[in-house]
Image 1 (cartoon, rainbow, N blue to C red):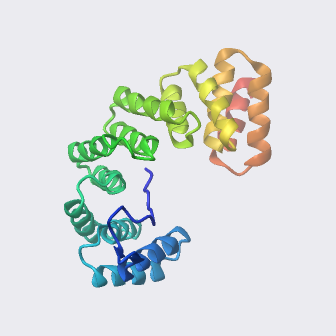
Image 2: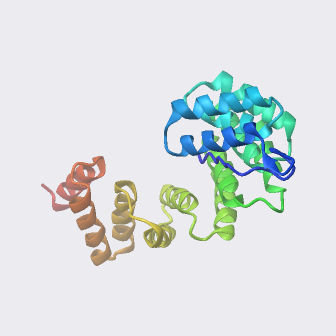
Length: 244
Protein backbone atom coordinates (compact mmCIF):
# COMPACT_ATOMS: atom_id res chain seq x y z
CA UNK A 1 0.00 0.00 0.00
CA UNK A 2 0.96 3.61 -0.48
CA UNK A 3 1.70 5.82 2.49
CA UNK A 4 1.61 9.54 1.82
CA UNK A 5 3.52 12.17 3.77
CA UNK A 6 3.30 15.89 3.22
CA UNK A 7 5.33 18.77 4.53
CA UNK A 8 2.59 21.21 3.60
CA UNK A 9 0.99 23.25 6.32
CA UNK A 10 -2.82 23.23 6.28
CA UNK A 11 -4.50 26.60 6.13
CA UNK A 12 -4.63 28.22 9.53
CA UNK A 13 -2.19 25.76 11.08
CA UNK A 14 1.46 26.19 11.96
CA UNK A 15 1.63 29.96 11.62
CA UNK A 16 1.85 32.77 14.14
CA UNK A 17 1.81 36.44 13.14
CA UNK A 18 2.48 35.40 9.56
CA UNK A 19 5.48 33.26 10.47
CA UNK A 20 5.96 29.50 10.66
CA UNK A 21 5.84 28.15 14.20
CA UNK A 22 8.71 26.02 15.56
CA UNK A 23 6.41 22.96 15.45
CA UNK A 24 5.62 23.46 11.77
CA UNK A 25 9.28 24.03 10.91
CA UNK A 26 10.35 20.84 12.69
CA UNK A 27 7.50 18.87 11.11
CA UNK A 28 8.58 19.99 7.67
CA UNK A 29 12.17 19.07 8.47
CA UNK A 30 11.12 15.67 9.85
CA UNK A 31 9.11 14.86 6.74
CA UNK A 32 12.04 15.76 4.49
CA UNK A 33 14.34 13.51 6.53
CA UNK A 34 11.78 10.72 6.28
CA UNK A 35 11.58 11.07 2.51
CA UNK A 36 15.36 10.63 2.36
CA UNK A 37 15.18 7.53 4.54
CA UNK A 38 16.98 9.30 7.40
CA UNK A 39 14.72 7.99 10.13
CA UNK A 40 16.73 8.92 13.22
CA UNK A 41 16.87 12.68 12.52
CA UNK A 42 13.26 12.47 11.28
CA UNK A 43 12.21 11.04 14.63
CA UNK A 44 14.13 13.71 16.53
CA UNK A 45 12.53 16.53 14.54
CA UNK A 46 8.99 15.17 14.74
CA UNK A 47 9.20 14.43 18.47
CA UNK A 48 10.46 17.97 18.96
CA UNK A 49 7.52 19.31 16.96
CA UNK A 50 5.00 17.42 19.10
CA UNK A 51 6.71 18.66 22.26
CA UNK A 52 6.60 22.23 20.97
CA UNK A 53 2.90 22.01 20.11
CA UNK A 54 0.97 18.90 21.10
CA UNK A 55 -2.08 20.14 19.16
CA UNK A 56 -0.24 20.45 15.82
CA UNK A 57 -2.01 17.81 13.74
CA UNK A 58 0.54 17.42 10.87
CA UNK A 59 3.26 16.48 13.37
CA UNK A 60 1.19 13.63 14.81
CA UNK A 61 0.21 12.48 11.33
CA UNK A 62 3.83 12.38 10.12
CA UNK A 63 5.01 10.73 13.34
CA UNK A 64 2.37 8.00 12.91
CA UNK A 65 3.69 7.26 9.41
CA UNK A 66 7.26 7.11 10.70
CA UNK A 67 6.39 4.74 13.52
CA UNK A 68 4.50 2.52 11.08
CA UNK A 69 7.52 2.37 8.78
CA UNK A 70 9.63 1.36 11.76
CA UNK A 71 7.19 -1.40 12.72
CA UNK A 72 6.13 0.32 15.95
CA UNK A 73 2.41 -0.35 15.54
CA UNK A 74 1.23 0.71 19.00
CA UNK A 75 2.98 4.06 18.76
CA UNK A 76 1.79 4.48 15.19
CA UNK A 77 -1.82 3.98 16.24
CA UNK A 78 -1.42 6.36 19.18
CA UNK A 79 -0.41 9.17 16.83
CA UNK A 80 -2.90 8.23 14.11
CA UNK A 81 -5.65 8.49 16.73
CA UNK A 82 -4.36 11.85 17.91
CA UNK A 83 -4.06 13.20 14.37
CA UNK A 84 -7.55 11.94 13.53
CA UNK A 85 -9.01 13.49 16.69
CA UNK A 86 -7.40 16.85 15.88
CA UNK A 87 -8.67 16.85 12.28
CA UNK A 88 -11.05 14.01 11.31
CA UNK A 89 -11.31 15.36 7.74
CA UNK A 90 -7.61 15.46 6.86
CA UNK A 91 -7.38 13.28 3.75
CA UNK A 92 -3.70 12.38 4.10
CA UNK A 93 -4.23 11.14 7.64
CA UNK A 94 -7.38 9.26 6.63
CA UNK A 95 -5.50 7.52 3.79
CA UNK A 96 -2.58 6.51 5.98
CA UNK A 97 -4.70 5.53 8.96
CA UNK A 98 -6.85 3.42 6.63
CA UNK A 99 -3.74 1.69 5.33
CA UNK A 100 -2.61 1.00 8.89
CA UNK A 101 -6.03 -0.39 9.89
CA UNK A 102 -6.14 -2.66 6.83
CA UNK A 103 -2.64 -3.96 7.55
CA UNK A 104 -3.90 -4.94 10.99
CA UNK A 105 -7.01 -6.70 9.69
CA UNK A 106 -9.48 -3.99 10.70
CA UNK A 107 -11.09 -3.89 7.29
CA UNK A 108 -14.39 -2.13 7.97
CA UNK A 109 -12.65 0.69 9.82
CA UNK A 110 -10.11 0.95 7.01
CA UNK A 111 -12.75 1.18 4.31
CA UNK A 112 -14.54 3.90 6.26
CA UNK A 113 -11.31 5.91 6.48
CA UNK A 114 -10.59 5.54 2.76
CA UNK A 115 -14.09 6.57 1.73
CA UNK A 116 -14.11 9.54 4.09
CA UNK A 117 -10.86 10.74 2.49
CA UNK A 118 -12.43 10.41 -0.96
CA UNK A 119 -15.28 12.73 -0.02
CA UNK A 120 -12.87 15.65 0.09
CA UNK A 121 -13.31 17.45 -3.28
CA UNK A 122 -9.95 19.18 -2.84
CA UNK A 123 -7.96 16.00 -2.18
CA UNK A 124 -5.03 15.94 -4.58
CA UNK A 125 -4.31 12.19 -4.45
CA UNK A 126 -7.61 10.31 -4.84
CA UNK A 127 -5.96 7.67 -7.03
CA UNK A 128 -3.66 6.77 -4.12
CA UNK A 129 -6.52 6.24 -1.69
CA UNK A 130 -8.61 4.37 -4.27
CA UNK A 131 -5.68 2.03 -4.91
CA UNK A 132 -5.13 1.46 -1.20
CA UNK A 133 -8.84 0.69 -0.80
CA UNK A 134 -8.56 -1.76 -3.68
CA UNK A 135 -5.54 -3.48 -2.15
CA UNK A 136 -7.41 -3.75 1.13
CA UNK A 137 -10.36 -5.36 -0.65
CA UNK A 138 -7.97 -7.77 -2.40
CA UNK A 139 -6.55 -8.81 0.99
CA UNK A 140 -10.08 -9.93 1.83
CA UNK A 141 -10.34 -11.87 -1.47
CA UNK A 142 -12.97 -9.40 -2.71
CA UNK A 143 -11.58 -9.22 -6.22
CA UNK A 144 -14.61 -7.57 -7.84
CA UNK A 145 -14.62 -4.79 -5.28
CA UNK A 146 -10.86 -4.41 -5.59
CA UNK A 147 -11.08 -4.12 -9.38
CA UNK A 148 -13.79 -1.48 -9.04
CA UNK A 149 -11.51 0.64 -6.85
CA UNK A 150 -8.54 0.21 -9.20
CA UNK A 151 -10.61 1.21 -12.24
CA UNK A 152 -11.76 4.33 -10.43
CA UNK A 153 -8.13 5.13 -9.61
CA UNK A 154 -7.17 4.77 -13.28
CA UNK A 155 -10.08 6.96 -14.29
CA UNK A 156 -8.59 9.66 -12.07
CA UNK A 157 -5.06 9.02 -13.32
CA UNK A 158 -4.71 6.64 -16.32
CA UNK A 159 -0.94 6.37 -15.78
CA UNK A 160 -1.01 5.58 -12.07
CA UNK A 161 1.45 2.68 -11.90
CA UNK A 162 0.31 0.97 -8.64
CA UNK A 163 -3.27 0.65 -9.95
CA UNK A 164 -2.05 -0.59 -13.34
CA UNK A 165 0.03 -3.28 -11.63
CA UNK A 166 -2.92 -4.44 -9.55
CA UNK A 167 -5.24 -4.63 -12.56
CA UNK A 168 -2.63 -6.65 -14.44
CA UNK A 169 -2.48 -9.07 -11.50
CA UNK A 170 -6.25 -9.41 -11.28
CA UNK A 171 -6.55 -9.90 -15.05
CA UNK A 172 -3.84 -12.56 -14.97
CA UNK A 173 -5.52 -14.41 -12.11
CA UNK A 174 -8.75 -14.40 -14.10
CA UNK A 175 -6.93 -15.53 -17.28
CA UNK A 176 -8.29 -12.49 -19.08
CA UNK A 177 -5.38 -12.47 -21.50
CA UNK A 178 -6.46 -9.50 -23.61
CA UNK A 179 -6.74 -7.39 -20.47
CA UNK A 180 -3.31 -8.61 -19.30
CA UNK A 181 -1.86 -7.50 -22.64
CA UNK A 182 -3.53 -4.09 -22.39
CA UNK A 183 -2.40 -3.39 -18.84
CA UNK A 184 1.16 -4.52 -19.54
CA UNK A 185 1.32 -2.19 -22.54
CA UNK A 186 0.15 0.67 -20.32
CA UNK A 187 2.68 -0.28 -17.65
CA UNK A 188 5.49 -0.21 -20.21
CA UNK A 189 4.54 3.39 -21.02
CA UNK A 190 5.21 4.52 -17.44
CA UNK A 191 8.11 2.29 -16.35
CA UNK A 192 10.18 -0.85 -16.79
CA UNK A 193 8.41 -4.18 -16.42
CA UNK A 194 9.62 -6.28 -13.50
CA UNK A 195 10.20 -10.06 -13.81
CA UNK A 196 6.69 -10.71 -12.48
CA UNK A 197 5.02 -8.78 -15.29
CA UNK A 198 7.34 -10.04 -18.03
CA UNK A 199 6.36 -13.55 -16.94
CA UNK A 200 2.70 -12.56 -17.15
CA UNK A 201 3.33 -11.23 -20.64
CA UNK A 202 4.95 -14.46 -21.80
CA UNK A 203 1.98 -16.53 -20.65
CA UNK A 204 -0.62 -14.08 -21.93
CA UNK A 205 0.90 -13.87 -25.40
CA UNK A 206 1.32 -17.65 -25.54
CA UNK A 207 -2.40 -18.00 -24.79
CA UNK A 208 -3.24 -15.37 -27.39
CA UNK A 209 -1.04 -17.03 -30.01
CA UNK A 210 1.33 -14.10 -30.60
CA UNK A 211 4.69 -15.86 -30.88
CA UNK A 212 6.66 -12.68 -31.60
CA UNK A 213 5.33 -10.85 -28.52
CA UNK A 214 5.90 -13.95 -26.40
CA UNK A 215 9.51 -14.20 -27.60
CA UNK A 216 10.07 -10.50 -26.98
CA UNK A 217 8.96 -10.77 -23.35
CA UNK A 218 11.06 -13.91 -22.89
CA UNK A 219 14.15 -12.19 -24.30
CA UNK A 220 13.69 -9.23 -21.97
CA UNK A 221 13.29 -11.53 -18.97
CA UNK A 222 16.42 -13.52 -19.79
CA UNK A 223 18.56 -10.45 -20.54
CA UNK A 224 17.42 -8.13 -17.76
CA UNK A 225 16.77 -10.55 -14.93
CA UNK A 226 18.71 -13.79 -15.58
CA UNK A 227 18.85 -14.65 -11.86
CA UNK A 228 15.19 -14.01 -11.10
CA UNK A 229 12.73 -16.65 -9.99
CA UNK A 230 10.70 -15.94 -13.13
CA UNK A 231 13.72 -16.58 -15.39
CA UNK A 232 14.01 -19.98 -13.74
CA UNK A 233 10.32 -20.62 -14.35
CA UNK A 234 10.80 -19.66 -17.99
CA UNK A 235 13.63 -22.18 -18.43
CA UNK A 236 11.53 -24.93 -16.89
CA UNK A 237 8.51 -23.94 -18.94
CA UNK A 238 10.51 -23.97 -22.20
CA UNK A 239 11.86 -27.44 -21.36
CA UNK A 240 8.34 -28.74 -20.94
CA UNK A 241 7.26 -27.05 -24.17
CA UNK A 242 10.08 -28.74 -26.08
CA UNK A 243 9.34 -32.11 -24.47
CA UNK A 244 12.78 -32.41 -22.87
